[in-house]
Length: 461
Image (cartoon, rainbow, N blue to C red):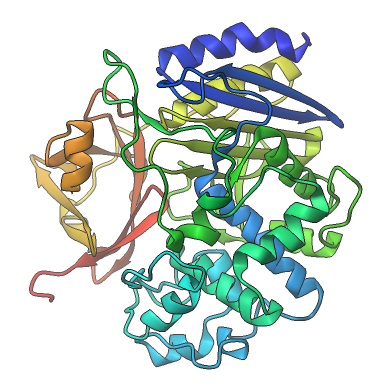
């Protein structure tokens, strides 16, 4: 094994290929921390990425929020399997059975099935209360507990509201008091107004590898995403989070953050992910579970509009990896960088993507049709026995990134429910999707990028 700092040129080359302005890599291996810093935190100012540079963590925030919620479970103040109504008596969605039965475990592992129909709840610290009040008419995307379907904001906002009622303070203060202060994390914050601008990385977008990156026009996600997407942190402090998972609830400073039993519950309480190829085959409580050539790996990803975060924890190797960037979000960037590190450490690398099976002969009629949710519509079509998946691109996204208003992928079967999608645009990479849960001879759901979309039969409203 070489000194990890000697990997800098190889990692720098990968980042240059993706036109990534800046990045911070954190490695925790057998108690030793290594940081590798690259590029600039803002292409306008040219300020270099430093050890204390904070990046937006996006949905990696969920691993932080889940940890704090599990403290309440440890203390007997909240319960994974008691209804949400045990803490929020007025909680209600459109389906009365879901209103009465949905639990924090459903929210933590994304199996509540509740649509993200919370409107515009504003930007002050009462936002999570208003989100809960706004979903009284929210329909079900899928039946409670039936299948995994990622909730970008709502599920963890409901958890945050439970935490606020139980602890008697805003979610932002809860996270600071329960996690950041005890762990000694001076740079990790939940709300943009608390981010030190002198330390903050700026997000960038890459429209083409022939063009320079440009600053994102959307600097921050709305506050509604807070518990599920708004934490900002440095590589060293995200490694401190990984340390808690890697060492059964202990922070690097020796403070016990969570009981070993609660950490074990977070890792072992799992549901299957219908499309297992993007992030992993199972979702636990605030963590994704992957299998890398027989090794169990835990972690979470996160992206905002111009910044990206990846955390992976490999208990068998006493290893955690963190990558924070302010540019291209493509999966192969993090995979190539992590593979360089993993190879140097002499352990397993990431598994390759699945290959299509050209011998499979599927009945296209089982899959064709529209799969949609508010704001997103996919259409599966068949031509000469081959399946295609089309996405209607959000007009604002299309304008910013110079994309067509509709993108179509081939669907190449891996099995009768799983498909590989070759790239349809220059910056795309191979993607995967699941068309599954056959009912009366037709797939009921499309699952791609961890999101769930129900089939809309002809004639349905």
